[in-house]
Length: 116
Image 1 (cartoon, rainbow, N blue to C red):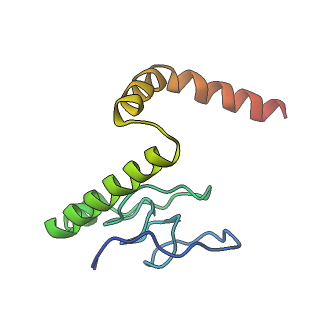
Image 2: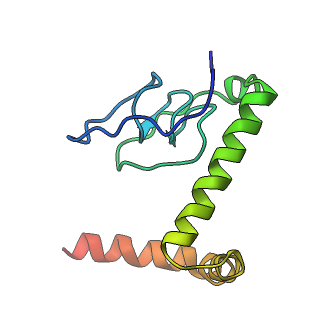
């Protein structure tokens, strides 16, 4: 069961973590920042294979946990914008232009990775 969202501990060795609710950047877990899990405050990619929990499990997260996760995610987003000296308006403009070329940039990254 989910309890309350949190960032989670950072693994100094970046070991892949699947399930559970302790490590930031894990996959398929609960309550912590990561990918493929449920009840976490925001997505956090540590570069590992993603294990996804079912949509039914995600839908079963209590509304108060979802609300707390959204609030924590918004707070982290605003803090990050402050750190990089970017306004919310700047972020929306960046997202609009970035989204328009996202697919092409991803294709180019794949091509460059293969060339290396």
